[in-house]
Image (cartoon, rainbow, N blue to C red; front, side, top):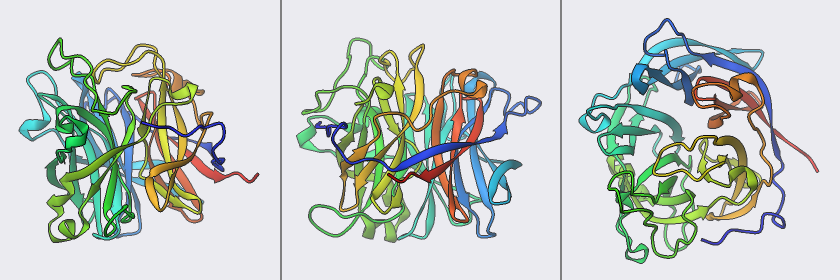
Length: 361
């Protein structure tokens, strides 16, 4: 994978400014006792903005909740809880000693006119990415796990690997040859030792940097219009961006769905510094910060700019101390009036809000 020289690429003219804490766990609720974090968002047909937090019960069992976002003077300031929309009820979403539906991201996919939720099912074979869709943001229909097409040039099967941080582009994107397609970003992890001791790290052909990196994959638009289950079939996967800067030296992953800005597609991402993780486990002492990447609007496989320093890093007590210390983890972005707000997990325990602002030269 070839990365651009971040010292010489064009500048990313955006910054994040904290607004405040939006949601903290209700410790009297057994479904939230271990934290609320890493939410998705969606606008309902009633004109209200809804939050879909990952809520964590005892034994690290996660569900996806729903809450109305309270907005005052154009700023999100709190939530009104409305229950649970997705729980680990399917057999592939739980194991004998684990269960969870985790870290949702929601994109309104304009060519289909539906909300697409990606989430991670923590089942008997570890984390597995999956999709659900909704027309009303209230009820969600599971489409099932993602399936990656076989690509001989990779000399492997991408379905062998755990994969996280799945986000859809809201619009169809150009492809090198042919009609525009739907696209998503994903983050495969090459270490198979957690599943079968002795297998070790098994990257695809041509991948020299085995650190977890952001990939892109494509979905046939016509097929998805005929049948939304086609959204689960991903073709032509390719690497987009790997760790480069010091704040992302261990791994990176996509944050909210890419946002179309004048410069291209703005992708906020998390970067992790610290020990290299093994399998999908978090390495002790890891530190999560927020960076940004600009993708070429004519070919989103191509990075045209990225930040050398984080836009947001753990500084507040809620970001430094929690279930997982030293974490800011962006997962949603929404426009409220003329302003954009980013929703992020704080130390795997609470949910914060920051405003995305343009910074002039």
